[in-house]
Image (cartoon, rainbow, N blue to C red; front, side):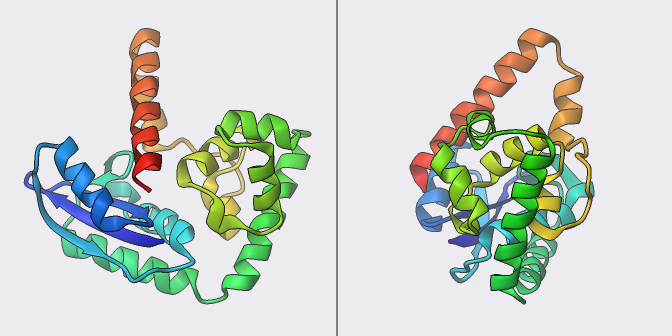
Length: 200
């Protein structure tokens, strides 16, 4: 998988990951009316999930919503490069620790693999794979949903820090909406996530 950054005409920068970044970037460009002015794509990396989450965390104070940041494009690329370098330092040890933290968080809440899978929108087999150390088969949205269900942050699962769930910028935005608005926003996010999965 690759980690990428794209910049819109308005200066907003998106950081994401994809197996087919060129196709993904073209799809995003169509979705936003062709407003992409620059794009950068990493070399393929087995640490793409950890790198994406870490880059998002590095730039969190500039997050506008989701994977979009109000940050200089070069700063975003630097954050990705730093995140990749940090994430690939000890990949086998990191995978083992990732799976141990995931399973420990699930069992501490007395949750079954089935219940976490249902919340995360994946199969029970996917959760079992994650717990065996196959974190490269995990998508960021599913990890976020699973982490929230287990009461921990995805950053804790990936890196072992921040041991309690923290409110994300998306949570803060959703909290300001009425129930019908929140339901509509979540439906839109789910539809967007489905588009992302189809593009991968």
